[in-house]
Figure (spheres, rainbow, N blue to C red):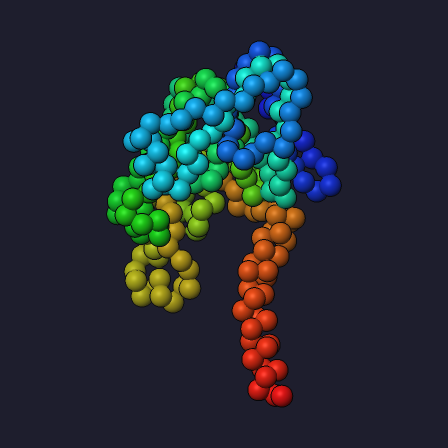
Length: 237
């Protein structure tokens, strides 16, 4: 199998993939640069898969890199997590997939309609599913904690679980026993994950990732702020 190495410099992280006459897949647009005798192939998907990807807002094409050499994927203020798939499928949160061995099959998993609606994802929610044998690289906003649930249930607010094994069931509900307590608590709906199986949880983002996210939010708000200032200046003039 290919070698996946997470490297770091200037407070950023990226994935280096070393190939020895091997093939890997990566997210569309993830390439930074590559060295060696490596061919890039982007096979066209079937019509059915294309429709599902459109609904799921997942990339239509994930290029394959074949040959011998090094592939460097683009850097981020967040991070990455490498784990192995051993036959049991895993379901990935939207946007979590980054790269994988070619021996790992990529598919789509559809959540239950009621669950996806209560989670705010609409009535139809497809997520990437990985199966087979090999390594998978995930996008992660912070350090990843792997939790073996057994028969336990864990309640999580938001999309902190970036992947779960197929045996883990997922529901959405309020964190309290009554609606009255829910209104008083000020908490949002939680996602409940029940074993048996494992989950990959990111509860704390990297500092630089949080700062970058807040900066992007500020920039998105800036045009409206400028319009308000301009209106105020016209009124005062």
